[in-house]
Length: 103
Image 1 (cartoon, helix red, strand yellow):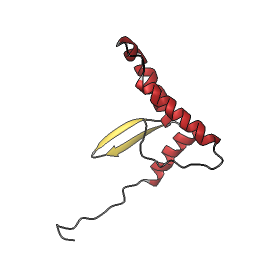
Image 2: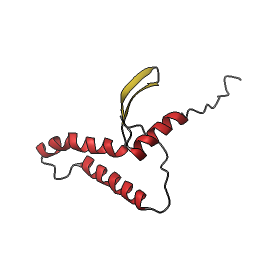
Image 3: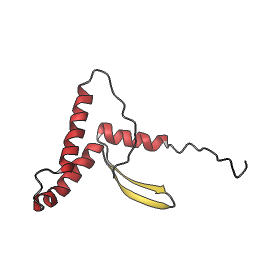
Image 4: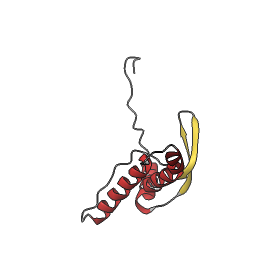
């Protein structure tokens, strides 16, 4: 392969995607360590709903102290919850592609 050519590598990790799906669909939480870009990232894998609920809770005091009438993260958490409710009420399961890991 010449210097002008580049190799395309499939960087998707099917097993990691499966773990994220378990967290999102079933609420499974687990400790996880990822190697990325020569470094390590560790945390607890949680569902997208748990992530945004936690973010809303953690930022609530800061939003109130600054006189904000609306906590933007609480709005996101509610939108995610609404999406989850709509998805569970649907007669056809809707697969959401894994795009993020929430720790």
